[in-house]
Amino acid sequence: MCVIGGGVLLSRERTKSLFSSGNPYSSGSVTSLALSPSKNVTDFNLFLKTAWSPVKLLTLCGDLQYRHIMYNASGIESHLESFFIDEYFNFFNPKLGLSVESKAGILYASYGIARREPIRDDYIDAAPGEEPEPETLGNFELGLRKSSSRISYSVNYFLMNYHDQLVLTGEINDDGAYIRKNTGKSYRTGFEFSGGYRHNSHVELSGNVSFISSKTDYRAANPEGVITEYRHVDLSFSPRVVGGIELRLSPFKNLAFDWQLKHVSKQFLDNTGNKNLALDNYTTNDWRFSYLLAARKFAQVEFTVLVLNLFNVQYESNGYVYKNTPYYYPQAGIHFMGGISVRF
Image (tube, rainbow, N blue to C red; front, side):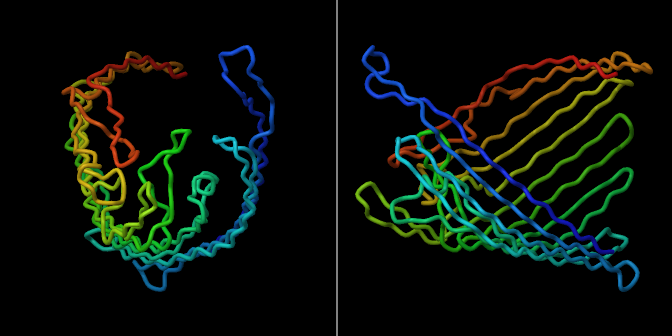
């Protein structure tokens, strides 16, 4: 089997913005209308996908992709300074893989290379003298998966080696968006486990957990311009353990109770490995009730009630760093939602 395809995406944007000079609350301030910003993007891609089974139970597959991107943007950024971006990229992204069927499940392995261009904010937020570069990823995966009417499971090992990865620095710009910059050598590697068990139509259990190591070599400058190099430190916003469990109980027809548990381990706000610039681990529980009131030919009415953060855990799931000081986004304690959906 062989599939050839492609496409072209043309994007043209131009907006108008209001800028004020002087005190905006004073009658003497001047407001002007200016063009800001404009963006023109041409994204052309061509791909070839193929699969071949030389012997029974063995499948070889390949995926070749070519991308050509022309990126042009200009305007006035939040500091009222003009910017101009005129870049083009040519990317070749190959991927090869194989799968073998067995009684234990489908055993698979693959390796692919993917490249991705910087976005507009990467250029605008770049430090003086720095120019963002495309990032390159080499991704290897090896795993086993199986699914049946009652049991399903998958085990996956991955190794993601990056060159010039665009990582979050932990800082935000004036618009509140996270700043990214190219880093040195970096990688992510780990194991992913997931599974499910359906005892009968009344009880279902599923879950997943990932154990991940994410490391990088990183350079950062302090406000005085002194550069510090950090070797083999954790990547920002990269918890080492992420997992969840979901239990569904359906004691009666059209009635269901769902319990969901989610755990996220400690993660750093930047790439320095500073323990004072980190998010603590947290575990949350959610509960959902649903009842299908009617299941007629032309309409179905379903009532749902959600209790989020059931045990009122006080936690922060995100944040940023400013002048070596952490700032956090606290999440809501216990809260409730309800809904009625009508399907025709």
